[in-house]
Image 1 (tube, rainbow, N blue to C red):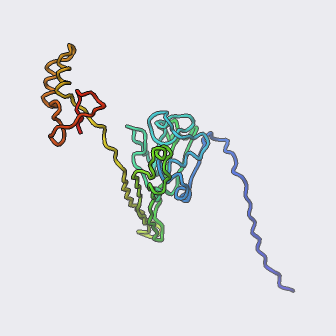
Image 2: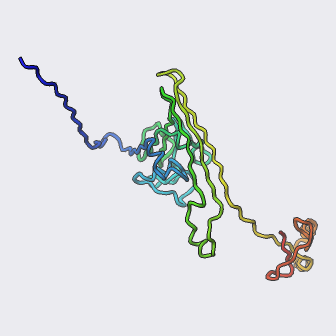
Image 3: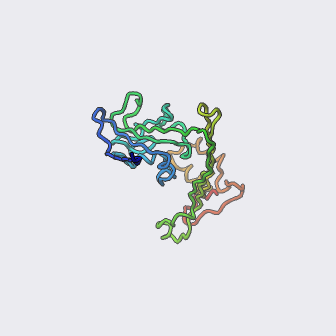
Length: 263
């Protein structure tokens, strides 16, 4: 009798996800790769920007206080946030009580419409994040998110004023993660450290003006001015002699000669 041949057949089939007719809940889930690689998560609200990829979700605009996008026409203060199944809400000003680095997120999910009672406390969107955990192998990462003035084009409004470069803005978000086993197959650890120095340019405040001696004389001649209050004001801000250096300051010609500039 002849020896027969052994054959192996692998059959792969794929079908579209069926519609769950038992619930009206809408759910959109993003995995680790989406959290790390999609550009929406690199600035602003971080991972919560991923919700803008869902149907019925838009930027908050000027629709009220709160954090995150507007979901199903609701204001952002109607959103609710969970971290590893635990409420992460700051009820004083609706927003996440604790922010988490993108590198520490294993999964992010947005729930809309009619969700289970366990997610009570919000009529807008339910934002749930799951943190990474350690595995039987030691793994980690070193990263930096960089946003720099030299990477941005000069704003057109600044260009019309003759400015050829952006004001200082240096945002460096850098850190590291590490995870591994404490007891294999039973107990694990995962840690994340992040440092975020930000450098901005400052704008000098507007100059202050104090009445000169002539200005005080004019104020004293007005019938509606309280003499006691005016005397107290003049006691602490003498006319024409108040300034940081203690010396007199020149009054600007385009202003009344009754005002002195305080620098």
